[in-house]
Length: 292
Image (cartoon, rainbow, N blue to C red; front, top):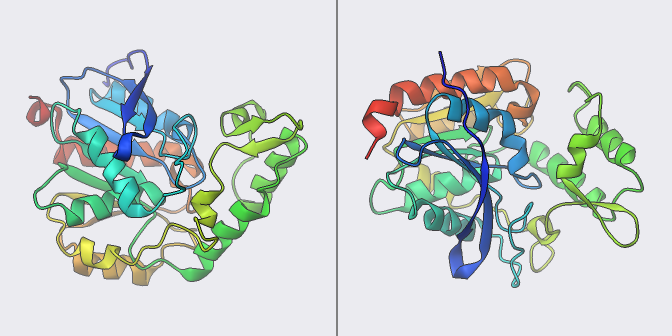
């Protein structure tokens, strides 16, 4: 039986070039560490269920808000490139007692893959990619970008935001309460609710976007640590071809398909997501081997 999850606290870290990053932290710091990294336009709160599950399993968990997201500082220079996000992850990793497992969704997974694949040594003990591969489907990526850019002007009410999310993910069950949305939105002086992330994440400093994946195919070639891809079979971002390509680049890749999930796997089927990641870590990054 998993242990009961300990209390969660908030901690601040210094990222690349001194930017302040905020994370929820839980578990025994002497236990094997797991770093949770959310997708673009999300916050650390998207990992709430996964964090409590991993802490209950005995891991030390750092659930990080990426720069420009949630409570972390916005980049004064608008730098949200994958290489800079990867450097932020490395800064947080340097504070840990042991090499961590990296669990990254979409943007967080891409930054994790880049970091692992371009480091001169194994900086992480295991890697979990959540619905992200180097060769993503252009149509799915465009749909995500359209959703993010269509609502930069905010929403009049929380209900309007909920309706926009429902239109983007019509197959997901709509929450009975809109209270949870308040963690991803902030009400400004004009009374409107805005996403809790810097618009330059998607627009880029020149308006063309920051999150390009050009470096990922080559980075994947050098990944030697245990790696799991958790894929939503209803995702329009990751295709069979993209999975096959990643498998060629990372021969030790394990794949867990979640039939009832789209791109937001952890949000669509948190139970199956937790099961897949928990089992993978217990085998590839067990508690007994990760201490010290």
